[in-house]
Amino acid sequence: MGVAWGVIGAAIDCYETALAYAKSRVQFGRPIAGFQLVQEKLVWMVQEITKAQLLALRLTRMMEAGAATPAQISLAKRNNVWMALECARKARDILGAVGITDRYSVIRHLMNLEAVYTYEGTHDIHALVVGHDITGISAFGGS
Ligand SMILES: Cc1cc2nc3c(=O)[nH]c(=O)nc-3n(C[C@H](O)[C@H](O)[C@H](O)COP(=O)(O)OP(=O)(O)OC[C@H]3O[C@@H](n4cnc5c(N)ncnc54)[C@H](O)[C@@H]3O)c2cc1C
Image 1 (cartoon, rainbow, N blue to C red):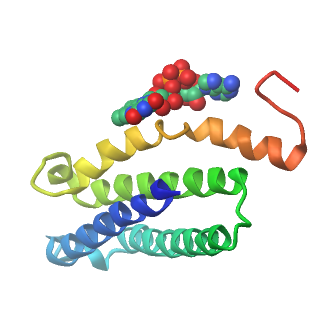
Image 2 (tube, protein in one colour):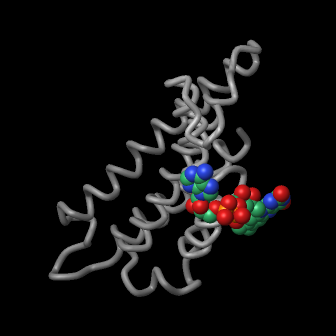
Image 3 (tube, rainbow, N blue to C red):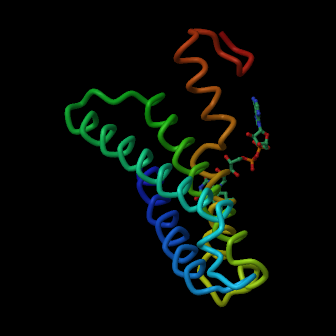
């Protein structure tokens, strides 16, 4: 649950860094923020960050009421880490070559999020937890 919230902060920093860079970086006579493909990436980020915030907030309210299940926490960790990793990848892309360097925070978020994708339950193992919950059938090999 902590991971599901924490990665939202990383995603927001990636989004804000990419947005500021895109508004200042001029190519082909205009800021790259004025190109449709760049705007689509920025919109995807703000859209998915908003959905992840709502998911984490709803799950927190359910935990406070004692109603949250382990599978629902799996779903939140799985979705929000994936969302943040995709934000970091898109932000890195918008920054072009400097996105590979440590001049901006994005590449550090990207490397950290690759690790978070694996620890506290891998992305695929959380899929099996949710899959077991919705089907009643374990894909781990047991019953
Ligand atoms: C930075 C970092 C910090 C960590 N900190 C801790 C810590 O503090 N404490 C701790 O205990 N551990 C920690 N870990 C370990 C982490 O929890 C494990 O790496 C993780 O559970 C995956 O185990 P594994 O590396 O052995 O990979 P494996 O279990 O070998 O998995 C490798 C791949 O196979 C997939 N896979 C495995 N089994 C199945 C299956 N049945 N069906 C489908 N796919 C499957 C996995 O999803 C993964 O993609 C940390 C890891 C990292 C990277």
